[in-house]
Image 1 (cartoon, one colour):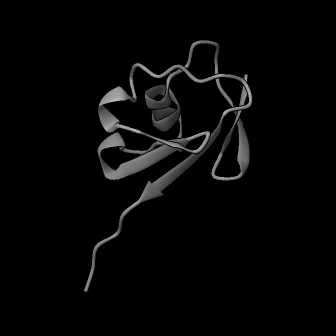
Image 2 (cartoon, helix red, strand yellow):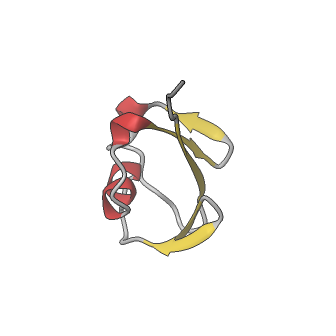
Length: 66
């Protein structure tokens, strides 16, 4: 299955969740916000939201500093 993550295509296995994809990419789930097909997905749902072929995801990471 192919999903688009921040404008690039990635292959994931069938039944993969947002948490699985973040782990594949080495992204710490607690440090990001995920938008899936235009909707924000709460972090508490990352492990339960299964991805579908063709999903578009935007993963945003907040950076602090001064």
